[in-house]
Length: 195
Image 1 (cartoon, rainbow, N blue to C red):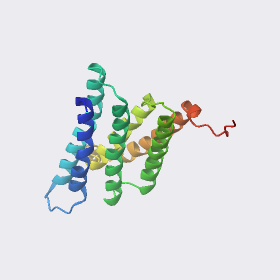
Image 2: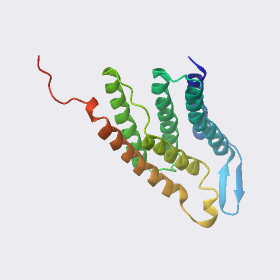
Image 3: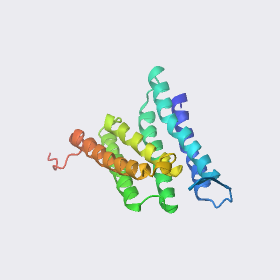
């Protein structure tokens, strides 16, 4: 359990804290500027989410710099990302800030790619994150932050950036999933092996 893996685990442990601030009915006051309004618990959840999401780059950097890349880290890192993003997306649906269909599309892709990773693992291979996988994570994080902070500052100029970012995240998520399966189709053998 090296430093990079400990940082990854810390990201996982921040998930229930973020959900607490989003879903537990705490009577925090609102910040109001003209027609814009946001609660303090949303701000706290957004800040914790940003800290947790930023550890994704940090643990990867530490692992590569110190030659601490391990199979455990390769498996834990995408798992931590999935837990963080999925938990917050489901919370946003509960808060009526995001359509359930987008979350279903994103979670379905995550499960499918996780299944592919498990099959690869059984074959003795580890599928690392691709550039599209990283773009997917960045797009999802951007959309989540915009939704958590009620589309600030775009709300002042009537630009639905949070909605646009959510659509972009969904599209990149689907594309990156297809990319994983196309590039790793050799892992899945549909033919029956004969002796």
